[in-house]
Length: 173
Image (cartoon, rainbow, N blue to C red; front, top):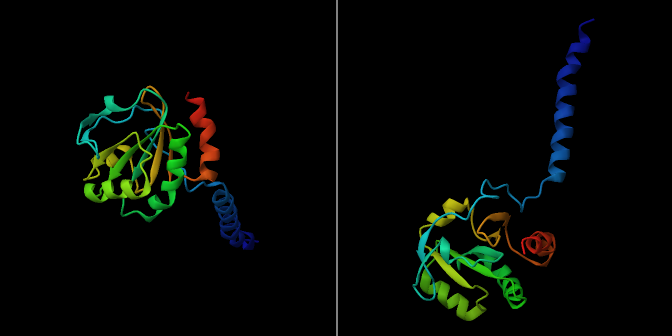
């Protein structure tokens, strides 16, 4: 009579297994939720990589842009760099954040591989990255003309990813 109680743990385990399996199929590992989406780009005080000019949030262009977190020590950043050059040639404004990197190496990198950036913010200690909730490089933020973060992508930006982000970027114009 009480034997049916033995099947309750099995039924619960099966139900949890099905929910877990369904959840795995829907997760996009490149898009991480960010509490900053819908919020202004964080305040910062830094210098420009190539000019040593003082920069702050008012230095950001008043138009839709991509803000790309990158570093020379990041192999995935090198993989995405050619695509960033293509986007820049198409007129997409890209601001770089050189994250926890050696500035001399970063300048050499841009000389060797091309410079798709309107300018680069030097973030040697990762303070701005921390404010942005950066997990590592590369990461790219979609920022509108008012300086509001509208999206975040973790990992390399490539043709496949851009096809999903471009409509959102175009809607910011």
